[in-house]
Image 1 (cartoon, rainbow, N blue to C red):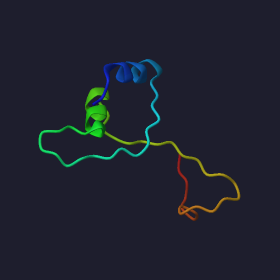
Image 2 (cartoon, one colour):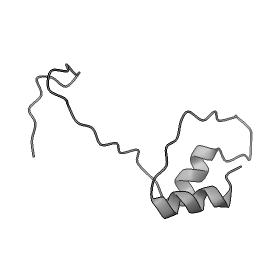
Image 3 (cartoon, rainbow, N blue to C red):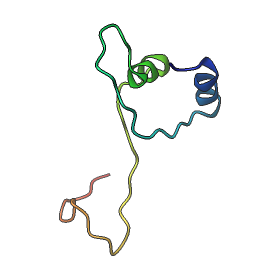
Image 4 (cartoon, rainbow, N blue to C red):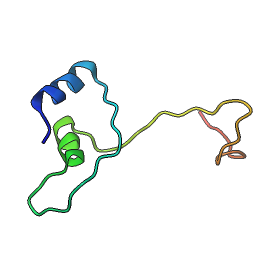
Length: 66
């Protein structure tokens, strides 16, 4: 389900943009999400974020540390 060429390209550019992927509930089937995590040794979905001046966020009022 996950072509080697696709993994090679992700490894080469160290970047992938992924949208929602449906995961069928089938015994013995590794979903594409699981295949990507295993093949690329991904264990956390870390996303960088930043606040923009004038835009209210859910974290307004929290102290920011460095």
